Image 1 (tube, each protein chain N blue to C red):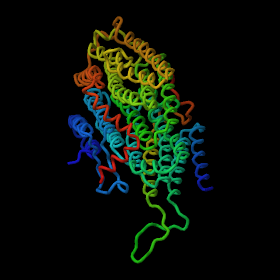
Image 2: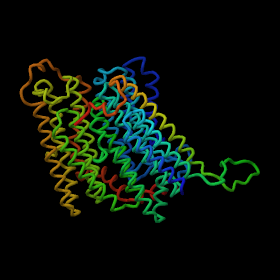
Image 3: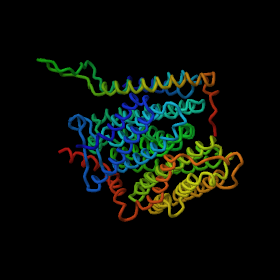
Image 4: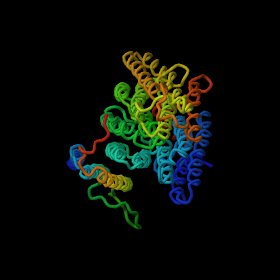
Length: 496
Length: 112
């Protein structure tokens, strides 16, 4: 039994079933969605052992042989991204059991949630460029609808803005794919990498690289293309904000950029230095805009831009240390940022407000939310024992190692400003004196507490991911990226 | 060559429409033009002058045929474009209910 297609089949099938029978009973919704996400988590953890053993799985869809048919590939990078995505989505699904009670039409929420998950898993496992585009659009369309889920004026406005910008980005991506197809007459990524390595095509590749940086950069919210994110992410329900900031921008933007710029194109110093520059601008712009925010979720959304900047900076360095740091930070950010969004959701659930100035002293009434958010805040601002410290340290060390002292300096400045911004959150929301109107506030129900607690524990533990024994997990992903167009050889070797 | 340039011009018209128009219905139409320009470009890549459909028939030699793959891909892209357009029109209707206008410059509660 091949496990690869299951990553797409389970969420798609779950979404189909939910839209049919979800109306009957509320408990069926919760059970079905949670079983689907949990089984995906188990499968993705199970799949780690293939890349660790140095094996690459290739699944031929419909039995057609790859240069002609579509294939799915499981290598180190795929497995790393699958674990990240499905870990967050599993915990978010648990959280949604109670959180989404406040909204009507819970089954529609779960349907869209699973569709988005199917799209993301599809983007990760596919080995075909056009298929990647289709899955990307499935995930995007589901996320447009989820941003507008509350159907209030602000949510509709944010969703409209997001839809317009993201659809233009998709058009750029499709144009890039069309140009690549016209040059290489193939859509299979391994085959295309092989063709591009054979022929001299630098002029076309520069043009396509620009199109892809615009397209995927917008999906990843790198700075000149970030305008939609601070509107769209806070407007969604908190569990979806956690998904959008935690994994969607990374899978649809960062993962696709890595796959295309390292495994598909010949590694090109110019486009990497463009990425490095845009990453640094993102770090600074995101964090400076975040400093002046009073809306809890909007502040977190701006920090997503800044943290994505660190990942892009690490990738742009192109050195083994930089890429390790970038992937490590990708994992860490998806954990602590989803935890922070779930915290903000818990506060909104209990208080009904997102304005930091109206809160205060919640530590007494909501101890678990306050303590987990403290852990996440320390992680995101890079306080030593927590995971965020190690990944930022790795990225900054990589900058120093490759002689980019200025970039390292800006990364440190960004980290200090992040700390300042999260001290503000802690001070206004959780510390200080409890206001009179919040004296009857209660801690949130247990599914929400469980999800937050597990994420906080992962925040502390995942600092060990670069420790000698556990680092094999990230190293197998880094090896795939550094092998460049060797990706084509590994895939073709498996087919023979 | 000129046909590709015309295709690019169509793309730019759509982009201009998205960026400069204030009415959200016009923006949606502009997005449709952008999508059609890309789809047209994709079909043109597979086109050959005097080419025929790549259908295999008995006792017939096909010498000059168009590439069928872009056509299949464009069909998929059109369906995706349809889904996005329908979604956006639905959002536009709801926006009109909430704000009472289609003018994008007046729909701006989210700032900062």
